Image (cartoon, rainbow, N blue to C red; front, side):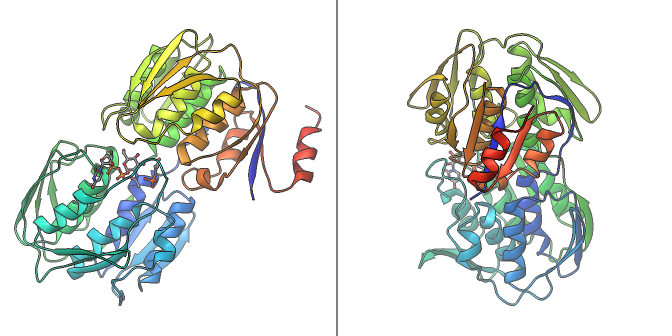
Amino acid sequence: MEQYIIRGGNPLVGEVEIGGAKNAALGILAAAIMTDETVILENLPEVQDIKVLLEAISGIGARVDKIEKGKVAINGSMIGDVSVEYEYIKKIRASYYLLGALLGKYKKAEVPLPGGCNIGSRPIDLHLKGFKALGAEVRIQNGSIVAQAEKLQGSHIFLDTVSVGATINIMMAASMAEGRTIIENAAREPHVVDVANFLNSMGANIKGAGTDVIRIRGVEKLHKTEYSIIPDQIEAGTFMFAAAATKGDVMVKNVIPKHLEATTAKLEEIGCEVEEFDDAVRVVASKRLLNTHVKTQPYPGYPTDMQPQIGVALSLASGTSIVTESIFENRFKYVAELVRMGGMVKVEGNTAIITGVDKLTGAQVSAPDLRAGAALVIAGLAAEGITIVDDIVYIQRGYENFDAKLRGLGAEIEKVTSEKEIQKFKFKVV
Ligand SMILES: CC(=O)N[C@H]1[C@@H](OP(=O)(O)OP(=O)(O)OC[C@H]2O[C@@H](n3ccc(=O)[nH]c3=O)[C@H](O)[C@@H]2O)O[C@H](CO)[C@@H](O)[C@@H]1O
Ligand SMILES: C=C(OP(=O)(O)O)C(=O)O
């Protein structure tokens, strides 16, 4: 079992390059099989979730050729099977995008109920409601969602809750439906826009992505394209908070600063300087962080995927902060681990009350999920002494070369697999 071992206390200083957005890439990979022509994708992050989805796509007969790092060619003309195997699906959430993609293209799909991080109950009723509104018959059978239709017919769909997954899934299926679909109360996340731009580059007709009303005129066929995925705003935000928590000075490169506005605003509120460039942001934290209140919201609000990272930074701020999680009911699992490192945090319902402490101290902790795991790494980097983070498989779902990128900023962090390696790290002279 791989673990991270960290000797905390070094301010992070230097430059870090951000990769492609995992959550955009997952939607785009699924959408890429909707044409029989070859699609070339660039800036794919080399993370576990992407590997799993690529395997699932090959598993149903699509051809996947790696051209170079982060660049693949996908050809969906040979898909012979519209039923996806559970082996792939149980590992990731975004496997549900194969439903919208296969239903749109073949008018039939069979995909096991998805996995992903255990951050809440995560229903997919809105995805299914959307497919039904497009005329599909949808049923759950032996643990799988089976959706099929004679033909898909455009429809007017109102999403009761703002859902990234449902918006993208319905958008994909509706792209190949007959007539016009309107999605109201649509999610506005940058990855929704990226998937829409990608589909449009394949010949789809989608307007309004990035607003809460998306209009789609269905087309019969989609065609080949070459497309480069947007930078990952959550990876970028994670490094921005790592800089803040360690009182560092980090230039986060290859980002779209506009996508980081909610994160930037909070960093400024807690006393960091954030300088914006065309495709980079620099975060400088020269004094003790200040307390604040934050509530997670759909984009352009503060992202739930950045909640654990700000929680850890606020545990080192002066005064009391309040963090409210309004998207998922189970996203405070890092708190128990943070308390073991000396954090003073109390969770009441969907709120964490954080009393800032002067310092955290290293401990052995477990990553409970992807972003909570990354946040515990930040805690370890800021803490005095040695921290060991277990269950880093969760972190590897969404961060490419996390430890190497952190080492590039002066962090002392290693990926280890044995007690011997841990001892070697502990006794390394610094
Ligand atoms: C692979 C991927 O892109 N994952 C992201 C995606 O997850 P995911 O697409 O699962 O999240 P959603 O945006 O759908 O969820 C938002 C809220 O809607 C609820 N809901 C959702 C669908 C549904 O059919 N019914 C329903 O009630 C959820 O329980 C949640 O409370 O967006 C989340 C919110 O930004 C992020 O935290 C995840 O990292
Ligand atoms: C929760 C996340 O991913 P998933 O929805 O795939 O579990 C995430 O990216 O933070």
